Image (cartoon, rainbow, N blue to C red; front, side, top):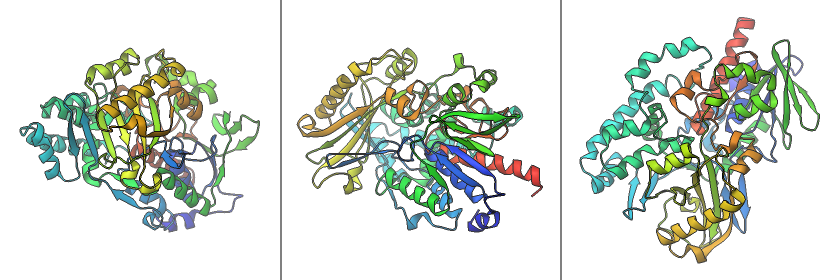
Length: 512
């Protein structure tokens, strides 16, 4: 698809279909651009004062913090959005490759493992723990590629709106042993306990427990190997800003500070939306880039019961919650990598506490983001910007965050001070945090879950929320809760699925 696609499909505002996109996260942004490239009049409605969804930007005391996703993989998915209109992403944005991709710190043994772009360098790191696992890692990557060739290349941007489309893939899914969990698959190839942890954490990046998440998500290993891991210079906020500028250049209407109260229906179709302040917006298509459980419960209550047949609320499992601590430091920590995974002394039992027992433990594992390792603009000279992401129970757990939030902050700071960031207690500056209640309030996420519904097998592909409502044929879903799932590649692919469904409908109507 190129600039001609947009040019050839552009019509006057009187005849072009009008598509409303609810929510300005990456799935909504990508959907808006793809619909505009199809010649639609597009209006994007966002409840916050800036688009980006979870990818907001906070500024405190001279420090800048990206609030949301920081890891860019499959960069071609962003390139495509500019190419829709004959533009080049690299004219506006620099994606800088990282090395290491992730640095793991194991508190139990006070040791480090660098996961690196070069397989040879990664093998050297593996050899420090268990040389025999070098061969196991080779087999893991080969298995990941086989899963990738089906799970990403063939299925990630394909609709699963009909059960027979799921049935047709069962032989492939069984052949790839998708009934295993990610941890189960990794453990078949890797023997050292800490390497097992390092190579099975990927589901946590999309909201899943490695011991429950289908091994389909092991494709992330090969996805990283194929395209690498990048950071957008200027941060995720810069990425959002340039995508907004692209939308504005193409005439997409962006309405901020507007919350949607209801999706209206008429004669078995979505007819538009009504905002909480009473404004009405008519539409030929509605694309939801919000949390599907929230949308069905709060914006489409008449349709919620129809969904229970396929996805009963009582059986729905949600991703974990997130506690995010933002802070600056008065001194620099040059030995801290861009991405550090700080692994506590417990692994499977800690995840069981978070996902199954839904309790907040005294211990934790952490993801530490130091953008100043790559981009000095995030902090004043000689200082650093950080955020720490800590998986916690979502609001289905009985945690009083007003009480426990400050305590967790102190435990995290003390643990980092004791291990990889000595002197942090004295150096920390301008810190603040957000937890599951903020995710529920700010992003209307059901139960304050960080990534919508969990990515286990019975909530993947056809079993996940469909990209088109089964009863309202012009109501679509793009985002973490819909197929194919969370993470930036997932939500960007969900917009491609929506585009395909809209295209099929238009072709059926017009024959072209």
